[in-house]
Length: 214
Image (tube, rainbow, N blue to C red; front, side, top):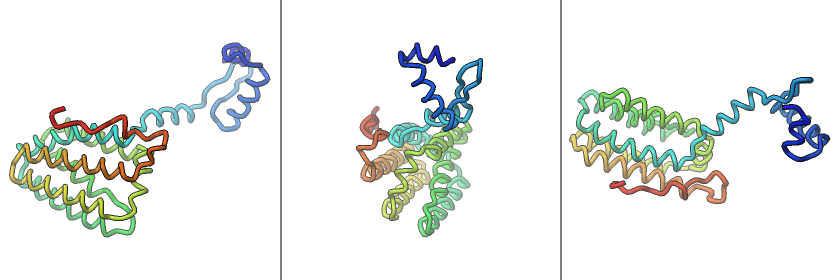
């Protein structure tokens, strides 16, 4: 869009528009093409897209609680001996992760994925994997996790995982569903305690816990 059109549209002087465009061009946000107009740079478009994809941690947890609880319940009906053995290995990896000097959630993620795989349904596996990808891409989620300096919370989450595994091993769908629901509720409460409620990106009040009956 030409400077004149921007000036008319924004109802400001052309000199003010020109100064603003110079600053935006220096920052790499726009490209001014003589005789053509002003164009948004590709990197700026990508940044805008990344912002739209940045899901808040409590919105994500609400979705995970609704979806992964039912996935766990169904997995309890379909789980095999090999699935159980692989989940045990994932929990051992999670214990090992806790002893490391740097936070590592790979065992945690693997355990949740294995539950989805135990449904023997590839669509459900993709759904759970997508939820975890959104978590890893969320800058807000990352910010919250940098505030968890000790392992008490994560050891409690490991105990939750043990309860989920016990329900799966016993082939108790309702118990597995309830255990997963409780676990993700516990994660939510933990993140609430380390959240900055004054942060403009805080979304905890927008996504309140939902009951098991919906």
